[in-house]
Length: 190
Image (spheres, rainbow, N blue to C red):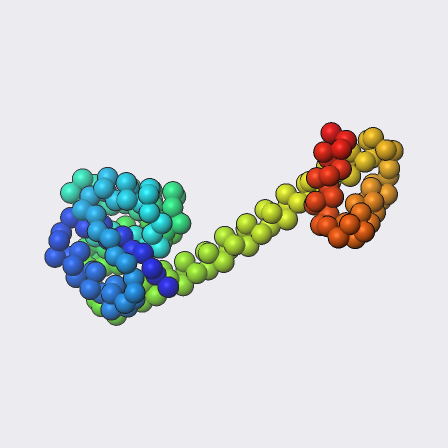
């Protein structure tokens, strides 16, 4: 679910229309507004937005650089709204960055589909981030355990199998995790 969206538009009436469309699709969504690229960069630096929607062009830049900045420095999805005559060129340039391009004038159904796609993509990305964190934690645990095994091999002359068995047995006997035992071994021998 899109909870926080930043709309970047130098045109107040367009910002209002986009806000209305978002509120119809996601009634509980909190919408923030920015009028320029620099203002939106500052807002994105201090807030975690689910999506940033850029109504191009802005008064201080077109919006492409801003879109690339948003997807590179935040976890927000990004949608650019551009004139029909340049939409294919902008879309081709932005697709490698993962920025969605929607033509204006905005067709309500197309915009809703874009928002739903952004929402689905965000859910998938959050799932991948969670999995990434879990794998990094597991990798760090393996490094600690291997470091403890190396200490046991170096200072007590254990083989790798003996060191592994020692850590496992201590974890079972003391009702602790292997990582806790590994930290204990490292603190003792290093």
